[in-house]
Length: 154
Image (cartoon, rainbow, N blue to C red; front, side, top):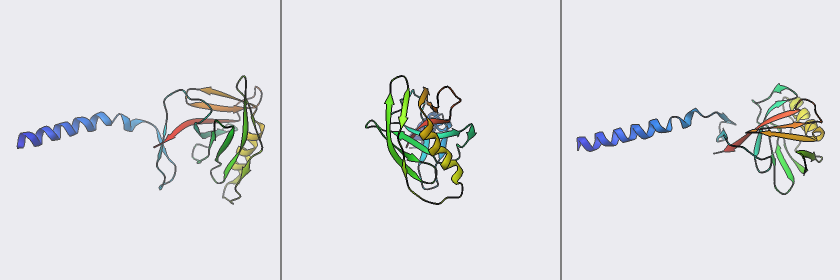
């Protein structure tokens, strides 16, 4: 009996240690009641990917819960970290994009400046670039207006 228990414990330790490398992947907790968000490690496409806002006009805003998703049916939706928004977009040849006027909820929040800038960027952006799990929205050949990282929710 002791041999069976010892074998079971050894197997359990081995399986647990094999899974420890999984725990080293970067994660971000959205809120205490929300599940963790794991950054993917594959090449992504603009469509059907949840994009977490990382920088906005060169400033780090990764602590905000802002995100955007471009759907196959040319609709776009997301959250500014306070208010939800949705609208339409057009995916044009040559990594060009035209994002239509957005509709948003009207909650009052502590820091509305980030939200205002995020919505303004969506209206200004005319192209995007993809590199691995990173997407940026750009205007002409200027520095990126906003950068995002692809995420998946567990």
